[in-house]
Length: 335
Ligand code: FO1
Image: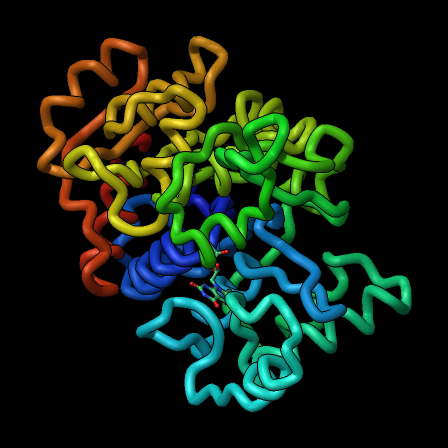
């Protein structure tokens, strides 16, 4: 009997990662993770490159989505922000004609950004701020930003009025205002190369018994986390098995804009394409195992041929039970 796993580390973006984490927590609580101790600790390393400064406030969508979702404060329909939300401040700002009006900050959500911004102004790190906010929300995981340094994903899009023929917008403008309806010609990660892993991040990977890449966006969520210097190396070097779940099902993303992002970096938009993009650890990549949806069963052979264990299982996170089953399948795949 091998010793049960007690330290699980999950690299996460926003909505997809948060939903996966709910299922992982349920699987853990109901003893459905083979070889994992029921009191195992989950550490989440969250993407912070979606972050933006708006109306003088620092907004961290992926950190907040994980925190609100696991802390039971999320608005389930939107998938982001607070439930029972009101929008008086947003309406007042619009009445003043203050831009941007396309990014909505709810009144309750603004309190989070006010606490974060005043703590940052007082010299606290984003990690310390996140720890403080989680004292209230109690998400049941250790939530770490990938870095305490400022990193922002910006997207270059075609702009006929510009001499270069292009214009660069913040990721949130690309996603929220433009609805990712125009091609992302280039994605740039401002500050990423100069960023350092936040305190505890490298240890959470090195000391883990299992590392999971949930079905978050492989380019602007998981990709950015792996892009923080030394994080990718920690993942390739950890003694823990590393298992991922495909965000692409049946040739397209379930939600979000993975298709546009993968296309912009020339990666095939398929379950196999993303798995091979992450690569086998035996070949310098980050994966030991890669779960694909049953609709993509024909991807399994290709992924295995690349040196990555693979199975086809249901990957639609329709409810916590379905997601818990995915989490169990991921653990089984690399145990
Ligand atoms: N998404 C939208 O589609 N419209 C919004 O107005 C919006 C506001 C917003 C405010 C705070 C926050 O934490 C998230 C917000 N999001 C909004 C979602 C956000 O774009 C996504 O959570 C991620 O950044 C994409 O994964």
